[in-house]
Length: 141
Image 1 (cartoon, rainbow, N blue to C red):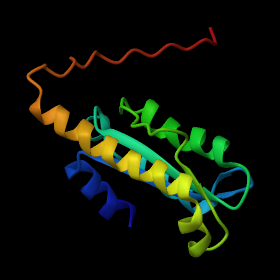
Image 2: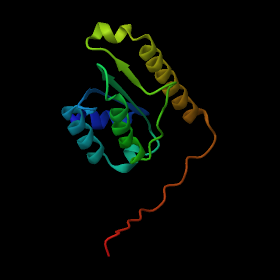
Image 3: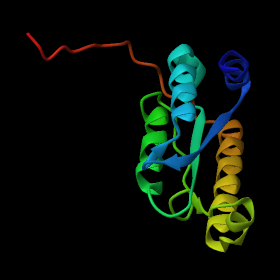
């Protein structure tokens, strides 16, 4: 499945990662999947593609999970798409989630912002930034 998603990622303009919250973090399955996906993809497949994440929880742990998932983007030179609040929605069942009116609004705003930024990228006459050569620093000397 990682290879299938990886190929779709290469062809996409952006990606939205999502996870339920378990112990104030993304689920183990989601973390394993995202780790493999981002590790296996070559840097140019990720660079300057838009990324966003959505977390769903019953009560707590959303902020730490939101932070965890956004790190996949920031380490990959991917602009992070924002909304009008942290991209989380609350509920124990699907019906509960739809009853979270604020959460639904946040996710609809996120979708609109993602679409807007992708359109801007293709309508812009501004050149994309040049890729700098890699540099590694080892602090253990």
